[in-house]
Length: 119
Image 1 (tube, rainbow, N blue to C red):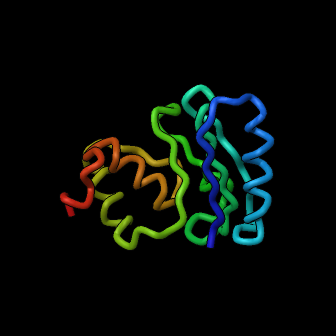
Image 2 (tube, rainbow, N blue to C red):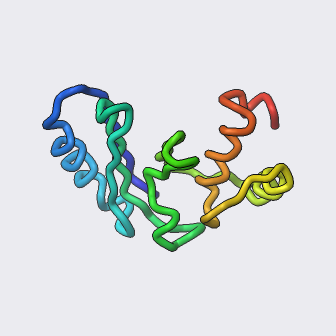
């Protein structure tokens, strides 16, 4: 089970704070630890990854998609991600990982935030 942390602030020293927050949950995801500042570093995402589906470094989070247009960190599993991936590939989407995380990002790009209404 992965460990995640988020921080919303505009103070410059918050990068050290999110690193510390992520370190506290490192035991939940020993395979990789990463942080990412988004929205001009006013939002920080931290992720400690327990690799399950795609164990390569390509699956590390926070994951960016479409050259940073979207960024995601989450703990969970999308059970029908292979079917969604095939559907998205038929629509012209390409994938660089084998993760359900990248499928979530592509699905969000295609269908927007109302995903629960689409399935």
